[in-house]
Image 1 (tube, one colour):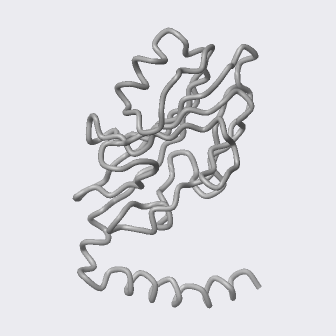
Image 2 (cartoon, rainbow, N blue to C red; image 1 turned 45 degrees about the vertical axis):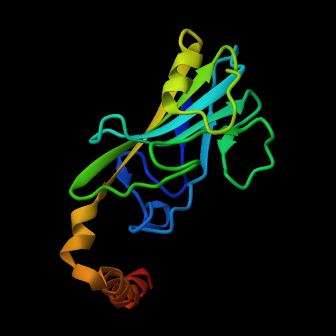
Image 3 (cartoon, rainbow, N blue to C red; image 1 turned 135 degrees about the vertical axis):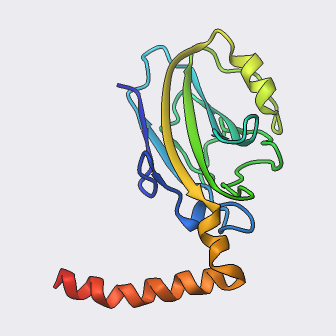
Length: 174
């Protein structure tokens, strides 16, 4: 079975702050891994889209057939990174408000598209039409209002609350 996982993001879970976009987090791209690609796979197309903001794309990437993970720190020369809606490369979730649902979609391809760095999602979709032989997804959400409710000191308050919980969690584990 073709599937994708992330050690830091559970399918159906919440986006950790590290992976959130500008103004919300550190904008670090998560490492995604996959297994079970169809035998005829010649490459992969990976996207991250906001299900609640149609046409907003946070990531578009093409990878070679030997890839088993997406990692921006890789030396994989087959990786070609595209242009999302606002940024080249990865842009983590950063909605203006409310709960948004995000979907990483990995498509196994029977042919690798010839795209140059900076391609957009429309170019990707046109280039892979008819060559998708498998799909794996990973979904997570983010509630921008939770941070906003805490006001301008939101990050400090969240950090303080986490530190308060740590001793209680450590005692419970003992």
